[in-house]
Length: 466
Ligand SMILES: [Zn+2]
Image (cartoon, rainbow, N blue to C red; front, side, top):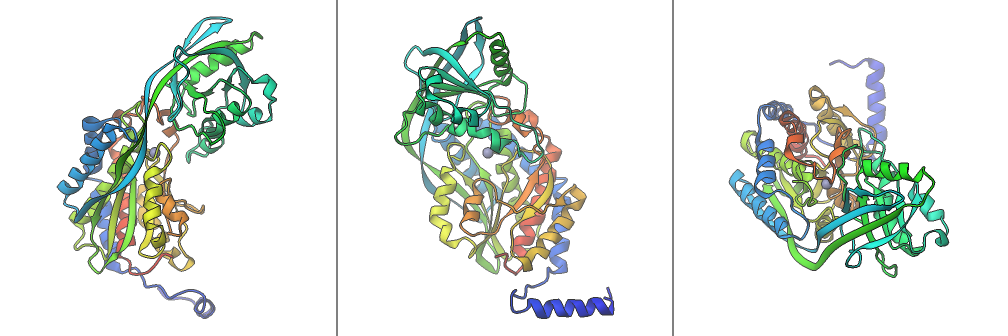
Protein backbone atom coordinates (compact mmCIF):
# COMPACT_ATOMS: atom_id res chain seq x y z
CA UNK A 1 0.00 0.00 0.00
CA UNK A 2 1.30 3.47 -0.89
CA UNK A 3 1.36 6.06 1.82
CA UNK A 4 0.42 9.65 1.10
CA UNK A 5 3.29 12.18 1.17
CA UNK A 6 2.16 13.77 4.41
CA UNK A 7 1.62 10.41 6.08
CA UNK A 8 5.09 9.33 4.95
CA UNK A 9 6.51 12.47 6.52
CA UNK A 10 4.55 11.92 9.71
CA UNK A 11 5.66 8.29 9.84
CA UNK A 12 9.28 9.27 9.33
CA UNK A 13 8.97 11.90 12.06
CA UNK A 14 7.36 9.37 14.39
CA UNK A 15 10.14 6.90 13.72
CA UNK A 16 12.79 9.55 14.32
CA UNK A 17 11.08 10.56 17.50
CA UNK A 18 10.48 6.99 18.60
CA UNK A 19 13.89 5.58 17.74
CA UNK A 20 15.77 6.61 20.88
CA UNK A 21 12.91 5.51 23.17
CA UNK A 22 11.66 2.24 21.70
CA UNK A 23 13.64 -0.68 20.44
CA UNK A 24 13.15 -1.65 16.80
CA UNK A 25 10.89 -4.68 16.70
CA UNK A 26 10.80 -7.21 13.88
CA UNK A 27 7.71 -7.59 11.70
CA UNK A 28 5.42 -10.58 11.90
CA UNK A 29 6.36 -12.79 8.95
CA UNK A 30 3.61 -13.60 6.42
CA UNK A 31 4.31 -17.27 7.01
CA UNK A 32 3.59 -16.80 10.75
CA UNK A 33 0.25 -15.14 10.00
CA UNK A 34 -0.69 -17.88 7.52
CA UNK A 35 0.13 -20.61 10.04
CA UNK A 36 -1.84 -18.84 12.78
CA UNK A 37 -4.87 -18.71 10.46
CA UNK A 38 -4.47 -22.37 9.58
CA UNK A 39 -4.29 -23.32 13.28
CA UNK A 40 -7.33 -21.17 14.08
CA UNK A 41 -9.39 -22.83 11.38
CA UNK A 42 -8.21 -26.32 12.30
CA UNK A 43 -9.11 -25.74 15.97
CA UNK A 44 -12.73 -25.13 14.95
CA UNK A 45 -12.90 -28.75 13.78
CA UNK A 46 -10.94 -30.29 16.67
CA UNK A 47 -12.47 -31.69 19.87
CA UNK A 48 -9.23 -32.39 21.77
CA UNK A 49 -10.07 -29.81 24.46
CA UNK A 50 -13.58 -31.08 25.03
CA UNK A 51 -12.33 -34.67 25.13
CA UNK A 52 -9.69 -33.77 27.74
CA UNK A 53 -12.36 -32.06 29.84
CA UNK A 54 -14.69 -35.03 29.47
CA UNK A 55 -11.87 -37.30 30.63
CA UNK A 56 -10.89 -35.13 33.62
CA UNK A 57 -14.46 -34.68 34.85
CA UNK A 58 -15.43 -38.31 34.28
CA UNK A 59 -12.30 -40.16 35.41
CA UNK A 60 -11.24 -37.80 38.23
CA UNK A 61 -14.11 -35.41 39.03
CA UNK A 62 -13.75 -33.15 42.08
CA UNK A 63 -10.11 -32.55 42.99
CA UNK A 64 -9.99 -30.59 46.20
CA UNK A 65 -6.64 -29.00 47.00
CA UNK A 66 -4.43 -31.30 49.03
CA UNK A 67 -6.81 -34.25 48.81
CA UNK A 68 -6.01 -37.65 47.28
CA UNK A 69 -8.19 -36.51 44.34
CA UNK A 70 -5.81 -33.65 43.58
CA UNK A 71 -3.00 -36.21 43.42
CA UNK A 72 -5.12 -38.31 41.05
CA UNK A 73 -5.56 -35.23 38.84
CA UNK A 74 -1.79 -34.64 38.85
CA UNK A 75 -1.22 -38.22 37.71
CA UNK A 76 -3.94 -37.77 35.07
CA UNK A 77 -2.28 -34.61 33.73
CA UNK A 78 1.19 -36.20 33.54
CA UNK A 79 -0.24 -39.16 31.63
CA UNK A 80 -2.21 -36.92 29.22
CA UNK A 81 0.75 -34.63 28.48
CA UNK A 82 2.85 -37.71 27.69
CA UNK A 83 0.16 -39.31 25.56
CA UNK A 84 -0.26 -36.07 23.59
CA UNK A 85 3.45 -36.14 22.82
CA UNK A 86 4.71 -33.05 24.67
CA UNK A 87 8.53 -32.77 24.52
CA UNK A 88 8.98 -32.37 28.27
CA UNK A 89 6.64 -33.37 31.09
CA UNK A 90 7.62 -32.74 34.70
CA UNK A 91 6.36 -31.47 38.05
CA UNK A 92 7.48 -28.93 40.61
CA UNK A 93 6.57 -29.68 44.23
CA UNK A 94 4.10 -27.51 46.17
CA UNK A 95 3.19 -27.86 49.85
CA UNK A 96 -0.60 -27.59 50.11
CA UNK A 97 -2.84 -27.39 53.19
CA UNK A 98 -5.50 -30.09 53.00
CA UNK A 99 -8.87 -29.02 54.38
CA UNK A 100 -11.80 -31.42 54.25
CA UNK A 101 -15.55 -30.89 54.56
CA UNK A 102 -17.20 -33.57 56.71
CA UNK A 103 -20.77 -32.40 57.30
CA UNK A 104 -22.82 -29.23 57.17
CA UNK A 105 -26.30 -28.47 58.37
CA UNK A 106 -28.34 -25.38 59.18
CA UNK A 107 -31.92 -24.63 60.14
CA UNK A 108 -34.04 -21.75 61.30
CA UNK A 109 -35.54 -22.58 64.72
CA UNK A 110 -37.52 -19.37 65.31
CA UNK A 111 -39.75 -17.49 64.63
CA UNK A 112 -40.59 -20.25 62.11
CA UNK A 113 -38.85 -23.55 61.49
CA UNK A 114 -37.15 -24.00 58.12
CA UNK A 115 -34.34 -26.26 56.96
CA UNK A 116 -31.65 -24.35 54.99
CA UNK A 117 -29.30 -25.34 52.17
CA UNK A 118 -25.79 -24.28 53.12
CA UNK A 119 -22.19 -25.18 52.47
CA UNK A 120 -19.12 -24.55 54.57
CA UNK A 121 -16.69 -22.05 53.10
CA UNK A 122 -13.37 -23.56 52.18
CA UNK A 123 -10.82 -23.67 55.04
CA UNK A 124 -13.57 -22.84 57.57
CA UNK A 125 -13.17 -24.14 61.08
CA UNK A 126 -16.01 -26.28 62.40
CA UNK A 127 -18.59 -25.36 64.97
CA UNK A 128 -18.43 -27.12 68.34
CA UNK A 129 -19.75 -30.69 68.19
CA UNK A 130 -23.55 -30.48 68.01
CA UNK A 131 -23.45 -27.04 66.37
CA UNK A 132 -24.04 -23.52 67.52
CA UNK A 133 -27.49 -22.01 68.11
CA UNK A 134 -27.87 -18.23 68.30
CA UNK A 135 -29.76 -15.18 67.17
CA UNK A 136 -28.92 -13.65 63.78
CA UNK A 137 -27.30 -10.24 63.38
CA UNK A 138 -28.14 -9.17 59.82
CA UNK A 139 -26.06 -6.86 57.62
CA UNK A 140 -26.79 -5.95 54.03
CA UNK A 141 -23.09 -5.57 53.18
CA UNK A 142 -19.63 -6.26 54.52
CA UNK A 143 -19.19 -2.51 54.94
CA UNK A 144 -22.28 -2.40 57.19
CA UNK A 145 -20.71 -5.12 59.33
CA UNK A 146 -17.51 -3.06 59.53
CA UNK A 147 -19.45 -0.04 60.79
CA UNK A 148 -21.54 -1.99 63.31
CA UNK A 149 -21.15 -1.88 67.05
CA UNK A 150 -19.78 -4.99 68.76
CA UNK A 151 -22.65 -4.90 71.25
CA UNK A 152 -25.08 -5.74 68.41
CA UNK A 153 -23.01 -8.74 67.35
CA UNK A 154 -21.52 -10.37 70.44
CA UNK A 155 -22.83 -13.91 70.97
CA UNK A 156 -24.76 -13.91 67.65
CA UNK A 157 -24.38 -15.46 64.21
CA UNK A 158 -23.67 -12.76 61.61
CA UNK A 159 -25.65 -12.93 58.34
CA UNK A 160 -24.43 -10.84 55.36
CA UNK A 161 -26.94 -10.73 52.52
CA UNK A 162 -25.11 -8.81 49.79
CA UNK A 163 -26.03 -9.73 46.22
CA UNK A 164 -23.58 -10.27 43.43
CA UNK A 165 -24.37 -8.44 40.18
CA UNK A 166 -24.25 -10.20 36.83
CA UNK A 167 -21.68 -8.85 34.30
CA UNK A 168 -20.03 -10.29 31.19
CA UNK A 169 -16.56 -9.83 32.70
CA UNK A 170 -17.42 -10.86 36.27
CA UNK A 171 -17.13 -7.29 37.55
CA UNK A 172 -19.74 -8.05 40.25
CA UNK A 173 -17.52 -10.62 41.94
CA UNK A 174 -14.88 -8.35 43.49
CA UNK A 175 -17.23 -6.12 45.47
CA UNK A 176 -19.41 -9.04 46.67
CA UNK A 177 -16.66 -11.49 47.57
CA UNK A 178 -15.28 -9.41 50.45
CA UNK A 179 -18.15 -10.76 52.55
CA UNK A 180 -16.84 -14.29 51.94
CA UNK A 181 -13.12 -13.66 52.29
CA UNK A 182 -13.03 -11.14 55.13
CA UNK A 183 -16.47 -11.46 56.78
CA UNK A 184 -15.46 -14.09 59.33
CA UNK A 185 -12.56 -12.07 60.73
CA UNK A 186 -14.64 -8.90 60.92
CA UNK A 187 -17.51 -10.73 62.64
CA UNK A 188 -15.19 -12.54 65.05
CA UNK A 189 -13.48 -9.30 66.09
CA UNK A 190 -16.89 -8.14 67.30
CA UNK A 191 -17.66 -11.33 69.19
CA UNK A 192 -19.78 -13.28 66.67
CA UNK A 193 -20.01 -17.05 67.14
CA UNK A 194 -20.21 -17.84 63.42
CA UNK A 195 -21.04 -16.25 60.07
CA UNK A 196 -23.35 -17.14 57.19
CA UNK A 197 -23.39 -15.22 53.91
CA UNK A 198 -25.59 -15.12 50.86
CA UNK A 199 -23.74 -17.16 48.21
CA UNK A 200 -21.38 -15.19 45.99
CA UNK A 201 -23.21 -16.20 42.83
CA UNK A 202 -25.79 -14.95 40.35
CA UNK A 203 -28.17 -17.93 40.14
CA UNK A 204 -31.44 -18.61 41.91
CA UNK A 205 -30.85 -22.32 42.39
CA UNK A 206 -30.87 -23.92 45.81
CA UNK A 207 -27.19 -24.80 45.54
CA UNK A 208 -24.86 -22.82 47.80
CA UNK A 209 -21.50 -21.55 46.47
CA UNK A 210 -18.40 -22.42 48.45
CA UNK A 211 -15.08 -20.54 48.16
CA UNK A 212 -12.26 -19.67 50.50
CA UNK A 213 -12.64 -17.83 53.78
CA UNK A 214 -9.59 -16.12 55.29
CA UNK A 215 -8.53 -15.94 58.90
CA UNK A 216 -5.78 -13.79 60.39
CA UNK A 217 -3.38 -14.31 63.27
CA UNK A 218 -4.71 -13.00 66.53
CA UNK A 219 -8.43 -13.16 65.63
CA UNK A 220 -10.30 -16.26 66.74
CA UNK A 221 -11.42 -18.23 63.65
CA UNK A 222 -15.19 -18.78 63.56
CA UNK A 223 -17.21 -21.18 61.40
CA UNK A 224 -18.26 -19.70 58.04
CA UNK A 225 -20.88 -20.94 55.59
CA UNK A 226 -22.78 -19.80 52.50
CA UNK A 227 -26.56 -20.03 52.14
CA UNK A 228 -28.02 -20.82 48.74
CA UNK A 229 -29.51 -17.66 47.25
CA UNK A 230 -33.15 -18.75 47.72
CA UNK A 231 -32.34 -19.51 51.36
CA UNK A 232 -30.82 -16.06 51.79
CA UNK A 233 -34.01 -14.61 50.27
CA UNK A 234 -36.02 -16.66 52.77
CA UNK A 235 -34.00 -15.34 55.70
CA UNK A 236 -34.56 -11.77 54.51
CA UNK A 237 -38.31 -12.37 54.18
CA UNK A 238 -38.47 -13.80 57.68
CA UNK A 239 -36.62 -10.73 58.97
CA UNK A 240 -39.31 -8.46 57.46
CA UNK A 241 -41.73 -10.02 60.02
CA UNK A 242 -39.87 -8.00 62.63
CA UNK A 243 -38.95 -10.90 64.88
CA UNK A 244 -35.41 -12.12 65.53
CA UNK A 245 -34.24 -15.28 63.77
CA UNK A 246 -32.72 -18.08 65.79
CA UNK A 247 -30.36 -20.15 63.64
CA UNK A 248 -28.71 -23.47 64.29
CA UNK A 249 -25.46 -24.06 62.39
CA UNK A 250 -23.52 -27.32 62.53
CA UNK A 251 -20.36 -27.63 60.46
CA UNK A 252 -17.79 -30.37 60.90
CA UNK A 253 -14.48 -30.25 59.04
CA UNK A 254 -11.01 -31.67 59.23
CA UNK A 255 -7.70 -29.86 58.81
CA UNK A 256 -5.13 -32.44 57.75
CA UNK A 257 -2.10 -30.14 57.71
CA UNK A 258 0.20 -29.73 54.71
CA UNK A 259 0.76 -32.36 52.05
CA UNK A 260 3.02 -32.37 49.01
CA UNK A 261 1.27 -31.76 45.69
CA UNK A 262 2.72 -30.35 42.45
CA UNK A 263 2.40 -27.94 39.57
CA UNK A 264 2.31 -30.09 36.44
CA UNK A 265 4.23 -28.77 33.43
CA UNK A 266 4.18 -29.82 29.79
CA UNK A 267 6.38 -28.15 27.18
CA UNK A 268 6.73 -27.91 23.43
CA UNK A 269 10.41 -27.04 23.14
CA UNK A 270 11.27 -24.03 21.00
CA UNK A 271 13.33 -24.70 17.87
CA UNK A 272 15.56 -21.59 18.00
CA UNK A 273 15.16 -19.96 21.41
CA UNK A 274 14.23 -22.91 23.64
CA UNK A 275 15.11 -20.95 26.79
CA UNK A 276 12.45 -18.32 25.97
CA UNK A 277 8.99 -19.20 27.27
CA UNK A 278 5.38 -18.46 26.39
CA UNK A 279 3.54 -19.41 29.58
CA UNK A 280 -0.06 -20.63 29.40
CA UNK A 281 -2.25 -22.70 31.71
CA UNK A 282 -4.98 -22.93 34.30
CA UNK A 283 -5.45 -24.57 37.69
CA UNK A 284 -5.85 -28.29 38.12
CA UNK A 285 -7.53 -28.31 41.54
CA UNK A 286 -11.25 -27.63 41.99
CA UNK A 287 -13.72 -27.31 44.80
CA UNK A 288 -15.25 -30.54 46.06
CA UNK A 289 -18.94 -29.91 45.31
CA UNK A 290 -19.07 -30.20 41.51
CA UNK A 291 -16.69 -31.91 39.10
CA UNK A 292 -14.74 -28.75 38.33
CA UNK A 293 -15.80 -28.58 34.68
CA UNK A 294 -15.95 -24.81 34.25
CA UNK A 295 -13.62 -24.03 37.19
CA UNK A 296 -11.12 -24.83 35.95
CA UNK A 297 -11.20 -28.07 33.99
CA UNK A 298 -12.07 -25.96 30.94
CA UNK A 299 -8.95 -23.83 31.28
CA UNK A 300 -6.76 -26.89 31.80
CA UNK A 301 -8.22 -28.53 28.70
CA UNK A 302 -8.13 -25.39 26.51
CA UNK A 303 -4.47 -24.63 27.18
CA UNK A 304 -3.32 -28.26 26.93
CA UNK A 305 -5.20 -28.63 23.64
CA UNK A 306 -3.76 -25.36 22.29
CA UNK A 307 -0.16 -26.48 22.74
CA UNK A 308 -1.05 -29.90 21.37
CA UNK A 309 -2.66 -28.39 18.26
CA UNK A 310 0.44 -26.31 17.52
CA UNK A 311 2.67 -29.33 18.14
CA UNK A 312 0.67 -31.46 15.73
CA UNK A 313 -0.15 -29.03 12.95
CA UNK A 314 2.40 -26.21 12.73
CA UNK A 315 4.91 -26.86 9.92
CA UNK A 316 7.70 -26.82 12.51
CA UNK A 317 7.99 -26.20 16.23
CA UNK A 318 7.68 -22.50 17.06
CA UNK A 319 10.84 -20.51 17.72
CA UNK A 320 10.24 -20.23 21.50
CA UNK A 321 9.09 -22.81 24.06
CA UNK A 322 5.40 -23.15 24.86
CA UNK A 323 5.08 -24.06 28.54
CA UNK A 324 1.70 -25.22 29.85
CA UNK A 325 1.51 -25.04 33.65
CA UNK A 326 -1.39 -26.67 35.49
CA UNK A 327 -1.26 -24.98 38.87
CA UNK A 328 -1.94 -26.73 42.17
CA UNK A 329 -4.31 -25.55 44.89
CA UNK A 330 -5.53 -22.29 43.37
CA UNK A 331 -8.87 -22.34 45.15
CA UNK A 332 -7.50 -22.26 48.67
CA UNK A 333 -5.21 -19.31 48.03
CA UNK A 334 -3.14 -19.53 44.80
CA UNK A 335 -0.74 -21.89 46.54
CA UNK A 336 0.75 -23.45 43.40
CA UNK A 337 0.99 -20.12 41.56
CA UNK A 338 2.72 -18.44 44.47
CA UNK A 339 5.22 -21.29 44.62
CA UNK A 340 5.80 -20.99 40.85
CA UNK A 341 6.44 -17.24 41.18
CA UNK A 342 8.78 -17.90 44.12
CA UNK A 343 10.88 -20.22 41.96
CA UNK A 344 10.60 -18.37 38.62
CA UNK A 345 9.73 -14.78 39.59
CA UNK A 346 13.27 -13.48 38.90
CA UNK A 347 12.81 -14.64 35.31
CA UNK A 348 9.52 -12.77 34.78
CA UNK A 349 9.85 -10.58 31.70
CA UNK A 350 13.21 -12.18 30.85
CA UNK A 351 12.97 -15.76 29.53
CA UNK A 352 9.35 -15.85 30.72
CA UNK A 353 8.43 -13.49 27.88
CA UNK A 354 4.65 -13.45 28.00
CA UNK A 355 1.83 -15.40 29.63
CA UNK A 356 -1.92 -15.88 29.79
CA UNK A 357 -4.37 -18.01 31.77
CA UNK A 358 -7.71 -19.60 31.08
CA UNK A 359 -9.73 -19.57 34.33
CA UNK A 360 -13.11 -18.03 33.66
CA UNK A 361 -15.20 -20.97 32.59
CA UNK A 362 -15.97 -22.30 29.15
CA UNK A 363 -17.74 -19.35 27.54
CA UNK A 364 -16.52 -17.98 24.21
CA UNK A 365 -13.79 -15.32 24.13
CA UNK A 366 -15.15 -11.88 23.29
CA UNK A 367 -12.20 -9.57 23.91
CA UNK A 368 -8.41 -9.45 24.00
CA UNK A 369 -6.54 -7.23 26.45
CA UNK A 370 -2.80 -6.88 27.01
CA UNK A 371 -0.12 -4.98 28.90
CA UNK A 372 2.79 -5.47 26.51
CA UNK A 373 5.24 -2.68 25.75
CA UNK A 374 4.21 -0.01 23.25
CA UNK A 375 6.41 -1.19 20.43
CA UNK A 376 4.96 -4.71 20.47
CA UNK A 377 1.32 -3.62 20.68
CA UNK A 378 1.05 -4.11 16.93
CA UNK A 379 1.60 -7.85 17.48
CA UNK A 380 -1.35 -8.06 19.86
CA UNK A 381 -3.42 -5.96 17.45
CA UNK A 382 -2.60 -8.50 14.73
CA UNK A 383 -3.64 -11.36 17.02
CA UNK A 384 -6.95 -9.59 17.70
CA UNK A 385 -7.45 -9.08 13.96
CA UNK A 386 -6.93 -12.81 13.34
CA UNK A 387 -9.38 -13.60 16.18
CA UNK A 388 -12.01 -11.21 14.76
CA UNK A 389 -13.84 -13.99 12.82
CA UNK A 390 -14.27 -15.72 16.21
CA UNK A 391 -16.11 -12.67 17.57
CA UNK A 392 -13.15 -11.28 19.52
CA UNK A 393 -12.73 -7.52 20.00
CA UNK A 394 -9.61 -5.62 21.05
CA UNK A 395 -10.09 -4.40 24.64
CA UNK A 396 -8.36 -1.32 26.00
CA UNK A 397 -8.12 -2.44 29.61
CA UNK A 398 -4.76 -3.57 30.99
CA UNK A 399 -4.52 -7.34 31.32
CA UNK A 400 -3.85 -9.10 34.63
CA UNK A 401 -2.84 -12.52 33.34
CA UNK A 402 -5.44 -14.30 35.49
CA UNK A 403 -5.13 -15.48 39.11
CA UNK A 404 -2.23 -17.92 38.67
CA UNK A 405 -0.24 -16.69 35.67
CA UNK A 406 -0.90 -13.19 37.02
CA UNK A 407 1.52 -13.94 39.86
CA UNK A 408 4.28 -13.90 37.23
CA UNK A 409 2.61 -10.82 35.74
CA UNK A 410 3.03 -9.02 39.04
CA UNK A 411 6.69 -10.03 39.02
CA UNK A 412 7.13 -8.28 35.67
CA UNK A 413 6.09 -10.69 32.92
CA UNK A 414 3.87 -9.14 30.19
CA UNK A 415 0.44 -10.78 29.96
CA UNK A 416 -2.60 -11.11 27.77
CA UNK A 417 -6.20 -11.67 28.84
CA UNK A 418 -8.31 -13.73 26.44
CA UNK A 419 -11.53 -12.49 28.03
CA UNK A 420 -14.34 -15.04 28.11
CA UNK A 421 -18.04 -14.30 28.24
CA UNK A 422 -18.69 -14.92 31.92
CA UNK A 423 -22.32 -13.79 31.98
CA UNK A 424 -23.45 -17.18 33.31
CA UNK A 425 -20.20 -18.24 34.96
CA UNK A 426 -21.24 -17.24 38.47
CA UNK A 427 -24.44 -19.27 38.21
CA UNK A 428 -22.23 -22.37 38.47
CA UNK A 429 -19.02 -21.19 40.12
CA UNK A 430 -18.03 -23.25 43.19
CA UNK A 431 -21.35 -25.15 43.27
CA UNK A 432 -22.41 -28.76 42.81
CA UNK A 433 -23.74 -27.58 39.42
CA UNK A 434 -20.23 -27.10 38.00
CA UNK A 435 -20.46 -30.16 35.75
CA UNK A 436 -19.63 -31.12 32.16
CA UNK A 437 -23.15 -30.75 30.74
CA UNK A 438 -22.82 -26.95 31.14
CA UNK A 439 -19.94 -26.85 28.64
CA UNK A 440 -20.64 -26.52 24.91
CA UNK A 441 -18.14 -28.37 22.67
CA UNK A 442 -18.28 -25.56 20.07
CA UNK A 443 -17.27 -23.02 22.74
CA UNK A 444 -14.27 -25.16 23.64
CA UNK A 445 -13.28 -25.29 19.96
CA UNK A 446 -13.61 -21.50 19.61
CA UNK A 447 -11.53 -20.96 22.74
CA UNK A 448 -8.71 -23.13 21.40
CA UNK A 449 -8.90 -21.30 18.05
CA UNK A 450 -8.26 -17.96 19.76
CA UNK A 451 -5.64 -19.40 22.10
CA UNK A 452 -3.82 -20.98 19.15
CA UNK A 453 -3.55 -17.58 17.41
CA UNK A 454 -2.09 -15.96 20.51
CA UNK A 455 0.18 -18.82 21.57
CA UNK A 456 1.57 -19.56 18.13
CA UNK A 457 2.32 -15.94 17.21
CA UNK A 458 3.79 -15.21 20.66
CA UNK A 459 6.08 -18.23 20.34
CA UNK A 460 7.03 -17.67 16.68
CA UNK A 461 7.47 -13.87 16.51
CA UNK A 462 11.14 -13.13 17.22
CA UNK A 463 10.60 -9.85 19.09
CA UNK A 464 10.06 -9.14 22.79
CA UNK A 465 6.91 -8.06 24.64
CA UNK A 466 8.67 -6.50 27.64
ZN1 LIG B 1 -10.73 -21.07 39.01
